[in-house]
Length: 373
Image (cartoon, rainbow, N blue to C red; front, side):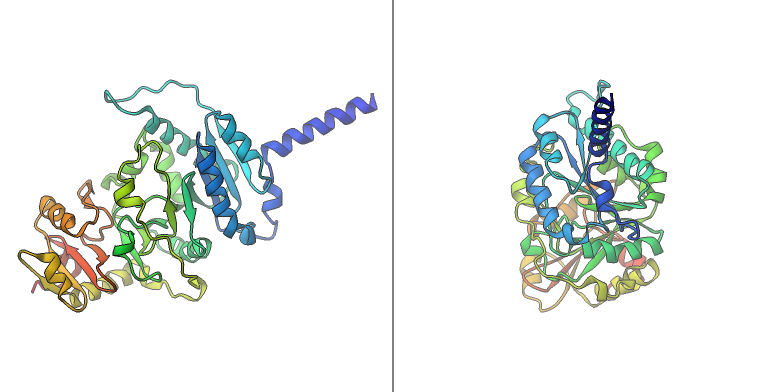
């Protein structure tokens, strides 16, 4: 009888250990975590392994500040066994058997599944595990060496300034040829995604109205953003290697493969990031734009190249912006009236070294209080 009781106790212990695998080991009772880190996974075990190894490289030394979770959507056995082969993380599994009804013919079911998974995972981390912040990664990302220090420094700004909706480690125009300064951060009206941190109070607002699909584009709608902005770096702190996935390699060769992953160890703890606070940032950004030399007419790329220092180019409307963006090779896409990476209608990127190019919207100078030359 005693032997039987011992066996039952042992089995129960194993079940409990599996459900919260490694969680207590990772969270030191005295250390309040900066954020939980969750890797969203589905059916790509090889990608997941590459992502976990990249995260562990820099997370192990700060694991009590950044407890790591894998959230798997579905029951792919190779992904589950890969996740459970690590004991320094907590595995969560989202099993959703409810059939998906797409809203338009020809839509991929995957985008609906992904939205359901995100809501479930974030509800788990904020409401079951009670974290105050969560960093979301996907199973096809590698991170930079200063990834965790960057988010720790940014969390202070995020807590102070309610006009910041989230902090991202990604710049859509972060290709090698368009970046220069690893210390530079920007505010943006466009949600970047791809390695980002949000707070519990923002999730309290988003969770009840979370969309059925296309959650990232939904976050870019003015009705959900409500005038708030996102922090993004000039040089990416994540690299997306996922050529095969739900987006079917869309844009991969042109936009994702050439992304520059930061390789400079920035001491974020010593950086004064108060310039990112809403009241200071508009002046900081206006000063940069005001000093830039206006360029007009045809051959804009050549003219910009021949000017020493920063340049500003005004666009009339979306099609004019797309035409100019095409000439330089940056993202042309808009969502709900906002170009990718834009702040107050202005898209900024580097061109051939430290020179900044500002593509300036028709109302942007007025909004920033700059007299049009």
